Image 1 (cartoon, protein in one colour):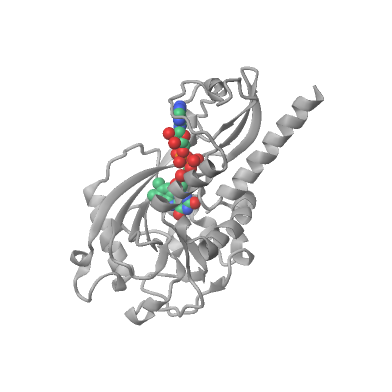
Image 2: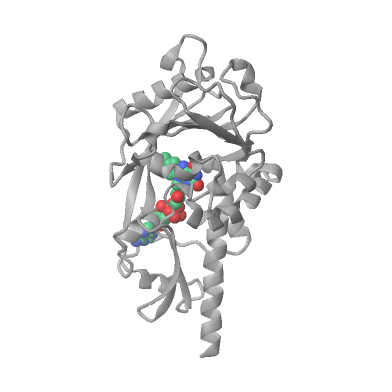
Length: 319
Ligand SMILES: Cc1cc2nc3c(=O)[nH]c(=O)nc-3n(C[C@H](O)[C@H](O)[C@H](O)COP(=O)(O)OP(=O)(O)OC[C@H]3O[C@@H](n4cnc5c(N)ncnc54)[C@H](O)[C@@H]3O)c2cc1C
């Protein structure tokens, strides 16, 4: 979740994600949450709900800082997403407060190919290569001419790309477990007692994509392989906070694991970079450094990048 400063990008994305969840099943996005009861019981399973649980003791740690806005009872998004409310007591053990709202969950294994198809049907030409310098991108225009503008969406590797070398972009490592169990719930807890960079969240994906159990938020950690001990802790915490994940009394033995995964969130010290800059005589529009909200802010950020591309063309027209 972006902070207040970055909220423009997410605010301008919600309507499109809601539209896709409502009207475009092939995009692999569904709503999580509508008028649910606040309950951990199995009887609540017919409801899908995004629940955010706050532990006051997490506030100063890395996960509390990361979730700062998400944990607020007056977050910037309270009038953007439907059904925002502060949860009444009683809370589960160790929880100090909570909120709930209607959210979406994206099955990225379906959504990303869907986006590629949309691009192809709109005439986009895809090419695959490794760039050592951002300026090289201009030579890949399908017309054979040098491109007028490059849009730089290189995420974490903006830190290593020639001409950009933004060393303020670092990984925030996230480890997850994908399971077949479908509790019909979306939970986030602000922290855990297992380590200051570990959190607990559960999201059920659309289109039979199983459920994601998270996670970690490890700044500066480039490790791409899952840690088995971390995986055990993730599963244990998930079953503790949401017993409805498994048959009664089965504990983590009741989880059916599809796969373990690790991703590196592209975290930028000063927040996302949506700016234009001339590099080696060619205009570059940057759009990188989205940390843990790249999907949630995607349409808004793209809109910002398009505005800058339009500015470049207006500048070129004046010359
Ligand atoms: C565990 C986890 C949970 C997450 N949960 C959420 C969530 O709930 N909501 C949300 O919105 N986001 C979430 N995110 C964050 C989200 O995944 C990222 O913000 C998003 O993927 C960033 O997209 P991007 O296109 O900027 O970067 P990327 O997806 O990393 O794409 C960058 C691309 O640039 C290419 N590239 C880089 N350098 C070069 C080069 N030199 N030459 C050629 N190609 C290059 C790369 O190959 C890559 O294809 C999560 C991430 C993780 C890891």
